Image (cartoon, rainbow, N blue to C red):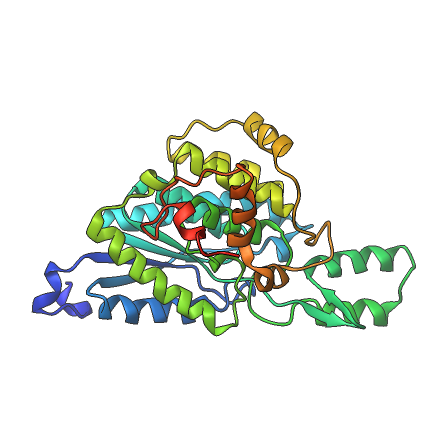
Length: 336
């Protein structure tokens, strides 16, 4: 059966890696993922791995919001986790690259990675670029706010339509520090995604390059048997929480990190978030509470710069291992 899908004589001795592909055209968050999955497949073969791609679901919170469809949102996280776990364990895979974009793709993929505890890397599909109208940056929440202004009689039909048409200009997840970008930042801070990967724009070439680099990191992790639970320690979760606080991230991170920690068998409680919050200041002026979007943060230095600022003040743990094979402190050594 494996010969029928392209295995040759020399391929049976290679590590078989799953590529969990969250592609769909249901939402802009996931519409660009096929490009990354294709790039990962080609790179994996060149790296001496045997990749096997499989799909997993998504629904769009932004589209289902305000409808009965929203009742399926959190459930979709569990379906995503279950599907990745089922395929990787069912096919006895040696490692997995998870590629996702929308809100529940990130925690769903990370729950699966924690359960499986085989070498793994999370590849975030990337943030959407800001929309522009009348000299202002727009995000998906701009459309929600415009609906409120319209219902309050503050703007007319034409103004509402103009915001709706310009708010989401292309592929990528919601552009502020909403749930997707919050969770991608947490995954990077935890060490399960590559440095800088969590704030890249979905449509930029560097996102493809980061995917190729992620395949190389996965190959190294398989060779050295660097496992997720060696990375996803209590200290790593504390680093993720600190970054969330510093970036003004989504409160949805609380329920997602608790679920990921449970799957990784890490003792994490809701009160731990308050303890971190008391120590860590908000460093980033990001939407929805602030002015800027994730691509602005990326240009300023991304999550590594935030982490360097926190590390210098003793607010994160520099000795945590990451998927790069280096510690947090080693990854941040040349960040300025």
